[in-house]
Amino acid sequence: MSETQLIFQLSHPGRSATSQAPKALSDDKLSAIPAHLRRKQKPALPEVSEMQVVRHYTNLSSKNFAIDKQFYPLGSCTMKYNPRGANRAAMLPGFLNRHPLAPESHSQGFLSCMFELQNFLKEVTGMKGVSLAPMAGAQGEFAGVAMIRAYHEARGDEARTEILIPEAAHGTNPATAVMCGYKVREVPVGKDGDVDLEALKEACGPQTAGLMMTNPSTCGVFERQIEAISKAVHEAGGLLYYDGANLNAILGKVRPGDMGFDVIHMNLHKTFATPHGGGGPGAGPVGVSERLLPYLPTPMAGQRDDGSYHWVDSDTLDTSIGHLSAFMGNAGVLLRAYFYARSLGREGMIRVGEFSTLAANYLLKRLEAVGCTAAYPDRRASHEFILTFAKEAKELGVTAMDIAKRLLDYNQHAPTTYFPLLVPECFLIEPTETESKEALDEFVDAMAAILEEARSEPDMVKEAPFTQPVRRLDDVKAARELDLTWTD
Amino acid sequence: MSEIPAELRYAASHEWAKNDDGVVTVGITEHAQDAMGDLVYVELPEVGQVLAAGDEAGVVESVKAASDIYAPVSGEVIEINEALEDEPELVNNVPYEGGWLFKIQMSEAGDLDNLLTADQYQAQIESE
Image (cartoon, each protein chain N blue to C red):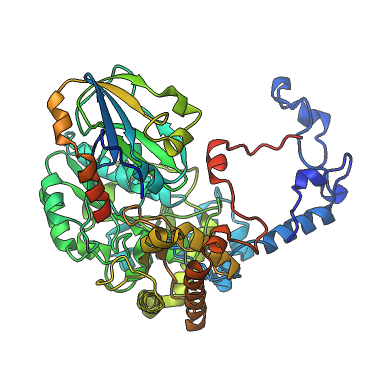
């Protein structure tokens, strides 16, 4: 495949899409902007024709590895199909053209969808209240821990300085705890993937603000001692935070609220099938137990006695941790999640949990049968599972990264690699419920072929990929010399 | 098989320690750098900082992961390897020489005895 030029390299002075070019501001409008704030020179944008732009980006998009083109078993990310129907409904002109400052009377349709979505999420997680305000998963985490902090502070309980986090947790959890002013204390995980309960009990104390964990854990197994964990943390006066990353596995089956969690954030782009970021808009609603209700971030959708809908804002909920953005969440993403939830219904939600778990366990057993090593062979997988290639790395010099790169040549997106950190040379694989048996079998065939290649032609596997627009990228240079500004 | 010099002492968390008359040079082992992959960033303690054995003393970050570095012995940090700011790859290339991280003026000589010998460390990484 040929090397693609950057759009800047296609630039030709004076060329433009004239029909789409913005009109220059008239002098009277221009004079409204103070002289020192006006641009002295034109921005360094590429000068290209409309046709060039269309071809350039269409060609680039055809090189994407994407859920619309390939199996995408990226563990912990829940890369399920994003239904076109939900997309279409969210694009209805009434939604698309609604201004966020429009009066409530002009937003009843939108507000009713948001109110119902809050209720669906409340019910499916077993929490007492839900706010859709967080703009993404990371902000949902921030809001969750900020509420834990607000709760302790409101009680004058200010000696609580530590958040406990199992070592199998998502990397974002410690970052969130630190962001909210807490110290992180790591709790070890046993050989079977469950939290070391004795170590947890020892770590709990008057300094414990809370515990952040996900269940099923990042080891791809359901934490069996969750009730004992919940009891230990609550008895020490701490609160329990549920990272919703792995909610897909238990949707409609088990509810974090019933496990004793006080706060949860949900990644709608995972569990509720809205498109994944790529830097684009996300949604990370938070749900809370009774005691955190006063602190939910605003605005939220509320319903009056006469059935009409309204915004609940910080003026009526003055204990709220407040706004997280100018308005409430990313409206388009929330609408997509609403339509997804509506089209699934209660029965559909249960099938999501069942089929995502079935797909993962089928894939795990078949991969073990072709020679892959499971990290937790004695445990049933949840919606995802871990393979380790420590043996291949040691005996053949072929690492998990080499196998991941070779998968691209088989037209399979690589699973998550080298995460969680406690399993060496690992893959974290999550097929989701939206894949057919045939798609799963193709992945198994590719893995079987690659393991064979690793034995017969290890040097070739170490050079992969061969069929992609680029070969191995220089990760070190990218991390150390991040420079995204085009200069001639 | 990665190199484990017999004259050094080792922490279970993969730091090595070399004692020169009470000044202990600290780095990470060849096994550790190999498991981390190419390093992109090294965060070191500050000169003058007083650490107890087991305290967090810095962070090494690779393209795969970030990992805390712990002080293998107690004492005051008297020197850090400033070359690592521009060349973290020294830790990958020469972990026991130019890739050292910091030096501690040891306050408790007994701390060294709590560390693993080369043979014990070898046994630990084989059992991992």
